[in-house]
Amino acid sequence: MRSLTDIHDEYDFLDGDDRYRLLIELGRELESMPDALKTDATLVRGCSASVWVYPVPQADGCLHFLADSNAAITKGIVALVLAAVQDRPASEVAAMNVAAALAPFELTRQLSSNRTQGVPNMIALVQDTARRIAAG
Image (cartoon, rainbow, N blue to C red; front, side, top):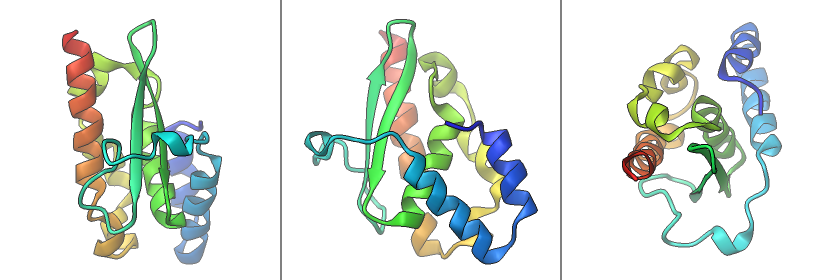
């Protein structure tokens, strides 16, 4: 997975439709999530599209997430969120300001509110999971 900084460098260079294409490309690059993990328990509430996020704690205390969506642009937004937190220590993910890390993308200006409404819920789910794992 590309770093959030690398993604932003490319995103910032693009405009309009090319930004949409980049988000779709990011979504396609997400690691595959097995259908068996796409359950009510992994479903992110409040998203206009279906979004699933599944944490995979690593032996070194880092978190790896599998995620998917049934909508291409939304899946790209999921990829952005994961780029901010993927394979970091659970304690770091729990403490970080993910919304601030995503702020340079100005998603609310680039996309409809319908597409971005679930982002805070996705961030909350990721961070709640990180807090639980960090607490042991």
